[in-house]
Length: 309
Image 1 (cartoon, rainbow, N blue to C red):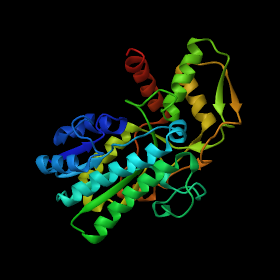
Image 2 (spheres, rainbow, N blue to C red):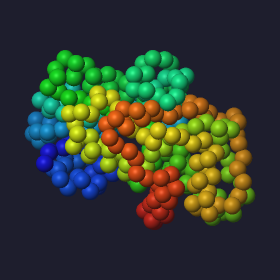
Image 3 (cartoon, rainbow, N blue to C red):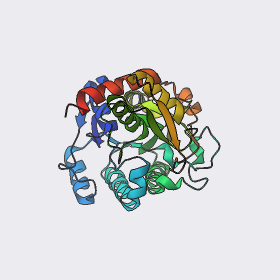
Image 4 (tube, rainbow, N blue to C red):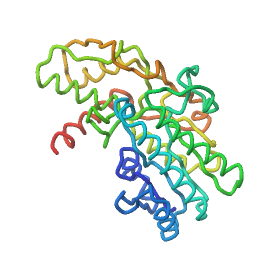
């Protein structure tokens, strides 16, 4: 049994890790932003000194889709960088030997050849639509590498998930990720008897989305096999779908019978973002939730929890 500090425990990734079945084997510290302001380094230091966690799993941060990133680049860069520096250095300087940094595949160069290997970080220009967030994530990832390089006692490692969706996701189009935004859009189109639903761009861009509960499963697998976990490891499906295919799959689950149109003036981000899962396979883990099952579970959550609020 380990004492684990989970930052961002009220967010989608953090809550799924906290509520995952294997969490019962550990003592979890789950401070809210009111209990622990991660932008204040002194408060972070004091909290770690008082609670003495064995390991930190860092999930906190400002997150959102393309619209949110484009509208708030200063906050996405500054806040995420500051939070990362505070929790990583606070843990390091207060003797926490194990640290899992939850990063993002947006760190990879926009023109990199897919599938994206872990060694491609900082090997090219970033995707402009989420550049600030990516820079912040790269900073935290590199800092974990440097700490481990300087002192092998401190095993500070980074998980690089593909795009995620699932329970506790956001469904507001202004700050949601693609899949929950599409679930909301298609559900409303069905309820309002709309004949068409608009897709940004031509819908041919490819994306890899993993059900977030699978990431929680991987996190506990990593804790159980920490010594042999790579410094940086991609976590995803190892295959992707087009945006059009996601819209079609969601429409099938919801029962929407209308047609789709395309707005070619809207930004679409990278043409493809598929992680290389060779290290993941070597580590011995594989995702469990199919796309259809994941969409079904997320849709049920949307109907039960989100619409009833």
